[in-house]
Image (cartoon, rainbow, N blue to C red; front, top):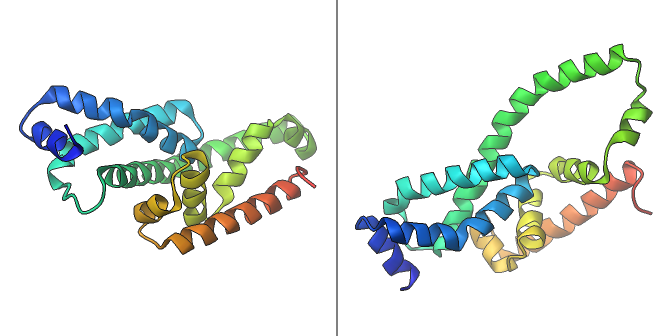
Length: 182
């Protein structure tokens, strides 16, 4: 059964085929969310939300783009909305943490030393402009062809290539500034 038939049968009420669809795409959705969120629990939550949204809006899928492209767009939008909400919440929590740290007289250098390499890389990725981060995540984390990344992002393949090049250069600068690299 191809994707069109699978989607049609789901719209006809075949719940078993929806389970097949989830199994087919859940790892891709999770990896995409993980590449954007850097947190397993958040990525799992986003993956669940994405499949609820897919189920609720499957009738609006028009078949103009590949189903996987449509699904990636939902995943990216859901992840980015989650990040926007989380940034608002973490601003106040971060401020409280800074005040707490300041009261313990920890130096900034000691705090930097405590960070793991993984956290530094995550922060560097998060510091990239949104389009660069998306292009980088799609092509490097997800290993999608530039053509598919371009389709998902609704830009040209050349634009994806340029965004990836800029992302690499910016990551290099950010990491060098943090004391990593040459």
